[in-house]
Length: 309
Image 1 (cartoon, helix red, strand yellow):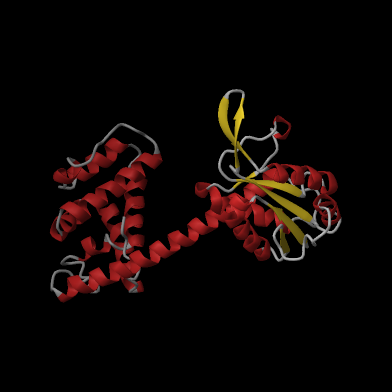
Image 2: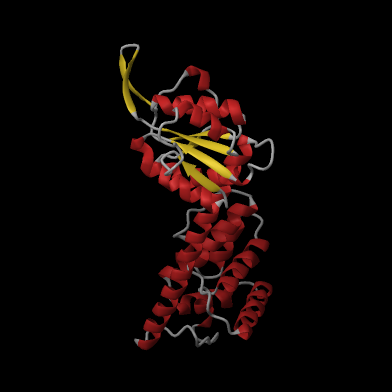
């Protein structure tokens, strides 16, 4: 499909970006400055009318092209020929196939108030790109719901954020492995050697499934946050309990949050011996569950996703 792009010379850089996006949608962009589009000797407006009969969509870039005075105040507005072309293409194609891409905050006619446009200001350009590509892909469908255009634009932004997050997670995993190698080489901590009689319980706190599983076990045994606090204190870890901001919340979400906080305090502020003593002092039925979990984690021998909370 052919999509005409109208803009001023001042907005030509943005028009070039839009050309690329139209190509990404597998359509043919027709920028206003394409060689041969306006043959010499022909009347420009008549040529535009002919173009409107040959295209499937039109994009008009509204930028801060001209300085004007409006009711005594300085303002900016799109180039007047772009405004005329927008009106022409809306009349020929319909309002869903002739759209506005806006950059800056140009003033435009009150008759255009309420029309959904694509915002291509720098802070929203990534989202605007996805909205425009989705609009272009839907040109062969009618009608195009502006709300869906924005929704798909948001989905596109989230996909990019997801990609960036996955790259960050990959980096953090590699960093963690390098730190583990360094700690082992310096004879500080060897996370690959898990000895429950020595320091294994504490090392397992860096393993996500043990960390989360232990937090869940503690939560299951405590209906209130005060019950969790008493469990920690009565199991010989009063110093750990003193580092927690306890409350009387009864919600499960709050209890699991505090259980995780307790395990983080053990992991950060206390050595492996203190945590092993805590495991030995908890009630037998809780210790049995934690032991079962620990042996299950060790049996898998997979320490590639050490917990980095």
